[in-house]
Image 1 (cartoon, helix red, strand yellow):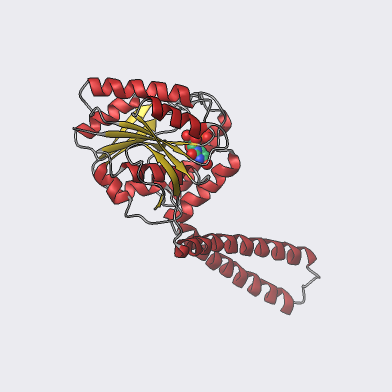
Image 2 (cartoon, protein in one colour):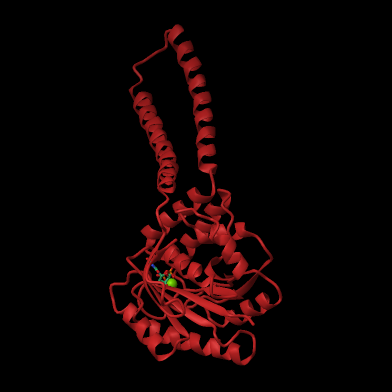
Length: 323
Ligand code: UDP
Ligand code: MG
């Protein structure tokens, strides 16, 4: 029988948790009644160092009904790491796990389709947004640019797919083999392989509370995605370097000709402009290389990606653990 785990990272989500838990519980009960998943399926909340009442709400939910379980991280580890903490815990307990956001933006009715595809033999089922009617123009624009940039840089992701997906136990086991500290799940999961499919859903507005992904975080997420999946920026810099080298040869020949034909005038403008242009390019290039060196630095440290402080649920005996 298929034991399903729904894994939900939560950071300051006290406003939405009561509703999210209610709707998810109903969804799982329906699936259990339909005989599609086993009756020991679970909803696993990961409290990512929330400053509000989130963890207490999760504990209360668990006390009332053991379908709700919770992982309490020792501090805020970020969305991707919180998700990984949940998935890595679920992988030893479930046959399939679905990851979704706490804010009900991911339409939970898509779970039916995911479970059906899983039963048909898919190991990974991606939730793909069919439209973004409720997002602001700005969010739509930045997200579009994000995907375009990612794919043009060779970091292949599933278009319009965030982290709403189902993964089978063996896909999760394979995911566990990817030990990188700079984790970008939606880029890594396609690398796992296995049979996959997509399920379309409409992304709703955040049920309550506010987005934890302001523009600054989205930008760093994009940089993270590209640099952890692709080395294309380094190649671009090399190309740029060659191009500038060629241009400088032309400039050299040109200025020598001017010099010997006695046509030189004090070229303040060109000097200043080139100093600025080349200076800027060097800075950008160093920055990009720095990104990669920073990554290498962090990877060599091999720090744990999350630390679990406590757990309520089937793994209660596990007091602390790391991955
Ligand atoms: N989240 C998290 N840790 C963080 C930031 C966010 O666990 O440091 C969770 C958050 O509670 C939510 C999910 O990640 O369940 C997605 O965040 P959010 O809805 O704020 O992002 P958006 O939908 O605006 O991109
Ligand atoms: Mg959201």
